[in-house]
Every structure is written in C-alpha cells, then in structure tokens.
Length: 306
Ligand code: R5P
Image 1 (cartoon, rainbow, N blue to C red):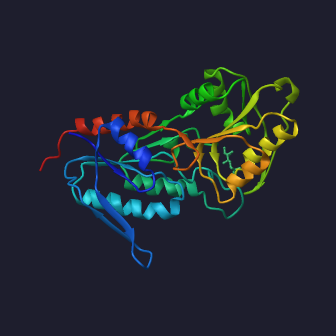
Image 2: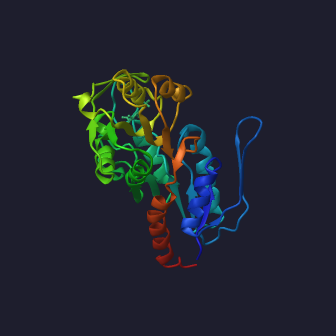
Image 3: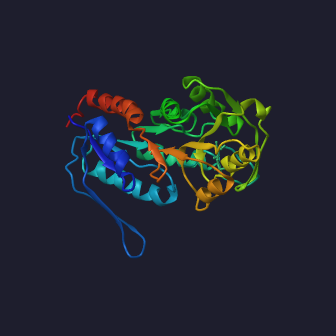
C-alpha cells in the first residue's frame, strides 16, 4: 500500500522532494499552539493500517519533541500500522559524555525518548564522535545516511582548484571521503574548544603550498560558526581567496551568519536537513533509500490477528 508522509511544518521543500522519492501520499494534519503555549494536534487523513513516515528535523529540539510525541501517539491511536521518524538532523548528539561533574549525558536520554516513540529512525550524518553507532544509545532500528557524495558533487560543479579543509579531527571522516571523490587535496586541523563560542584551531601546516587553491571548509554542523570563522580568518589573513563554507547541517545560532561573513567567508552552502537560505543541496534522494527499506519491511510483516 502507498506509504504516508507526515511532514512537520518548516521543511516544505525537503518534504516535497521526499514525497516524490518515496511515492508517498501526504498526511493532512493541524498543529498549532493554544494562546497559553500548549500544543494542539489533529490528524485529518485516514491512517488506519498504513505505514507512516514522519519528517521532523530535530533542530531546536526542545520545541519539537513534545509535539512530535503527541503526533506519534495520535497516529497510533488512529490505527497506523507503523510510525517511523525521518530526522535529517538529529539533535543532542554532542553531549555524549559527562565533560564536568554533575552534567547530564543528554544524548542518552534523548535517544530513549525517541526510541520509545518511533518504530525506526533515519537520519543524516549524526555527530558520532565518541560513539561508533546509534545502536549504542537507540534501541529501535536506525539508518544513517551520508551527505559526502552530494558535497563532492557540489564542489566539483562550483569550485575550481579546491582545497578541502576539515576544522577538527572529528571532521576527518567527512573531509577525506569528500576530497577523494572530487578528487582534490585535503587538510585536517586541530580544534580546541574552551567554551560554546570560544574556539581556536591550529594553523594550516605549510599553507603556502596551497596558494592558488580555493579553501572549501567542510564540517557536519555550523552552529555558532566560531569553528569555521577562525579557519576562514586564517586563510584570509594569508591572502587566500574567500573560503567556501560547506556544512551538512546549518544550525546557525543567531549571530553565526555575521560571524562567517565578518571573518571573510565567501559562499556559505548547506544541505536542506535544516531549512535555511543557504540550502543548495537536496538530500531527499539519500534519505529515501533507507526509508523505503523500512517501509517495505513493514509491508512484508504479517497482518496482526484481529
Ligand atoms: C563539533 O565537533 C562539530 O563537528 C562542529 O565542528 C561544531 O559543532 C561546530 O560548532 P560551532 O559552529 O558552534 O563552532
């Protein structure tokens, strides 16, 4: 049976391309806030015995998680056969250890909440640093997609003589595969973070060797943009062309855009895992593959005995 896609408001363009990729019908629903700030949910489509994929990126997660739980519960009460979650950006992945005494490891409790709500989870480039896989904290089937092939295609189409730059050792996993596919050289720097907005990054070793190339900074997340900002500044001070900033997830804290532009960044480009004016790369084609897999698995399950 045709799957259903329920797209949380705010990512209409990604929802439209995913709906095409999945050949899904959309779920009509109303989601709004009462004057007191509480959430109202109503599902208008018939979801009985249907497999539903919810598209809800988890950028600014605290405002989304409770409405999401209400939506999942309503779908189940209305008889949906399965309810999966497509969260192109998966939040709460960075607090993956107790850095200081008394801190909560929020990635774990967030994973428990999602695992209790959804039957499966599909995401893109989650921030797996100290953990190897989502299965360490998520108890539902999960699938991780990678934007790297699309980032390489974008660089190939838009940048002459690129030098791919990873701002920290964590970015090596993306940077290496992106550069190899272009193909072009890459360097990976070392970052020290002293606070949310206090970051320093090692200097580019033998920077003169790369003269004539356009630096393309690649990272999974652009949040405060302090990480990319200091690297941009370094290249501008060495009189390189304005670096291109390429991020998978454009989280963009309030002053992030200005931080990049004031540092001397050129184009700032992101994928559409989070809707933003910088979105130039559509990831629907990559997300659709595992989603289709989960939906067809559910289709093959025997019908429950009445
Ligand atoms: C962290 O390790 C990530 O890979 C990014 O480098 C980081 O999230 C970027 O954060 P910000 O834009 O706040 O410097």
